[in-house]
Amino acid sequence: MRTEPTWRIPVGILGLLVGLAIYGIVIARYAPSIIGDWPALAQTLVYIVLGVLWLLPLRRFLIWMETGRWSAPGK
Image (cartoon, rainbow, N blue to C red; front, top):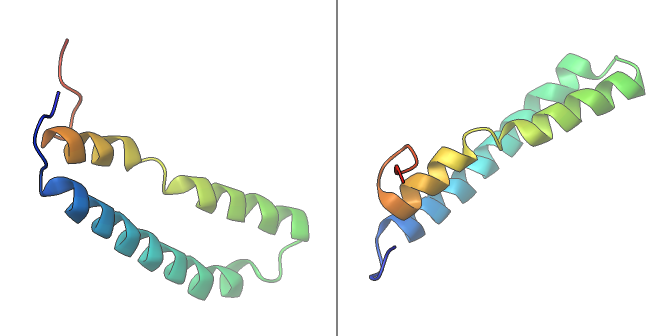
């Protein structure tokens, strides 16, 4: 358990915000031109997948913010 503040948490939060902003801008810029002519249901499914996709690396990122390692510590 962490007892002292670490630089990884504020840097990690800023990195997460910057990364999500870039991801959102890229999706908002390029997805409509690619899937804009698709049926509404197909577009909805693509946006749902893209909206959840950023969560995949989040677990390891949060572990790094807390421990400084990219994998969970052993018990």
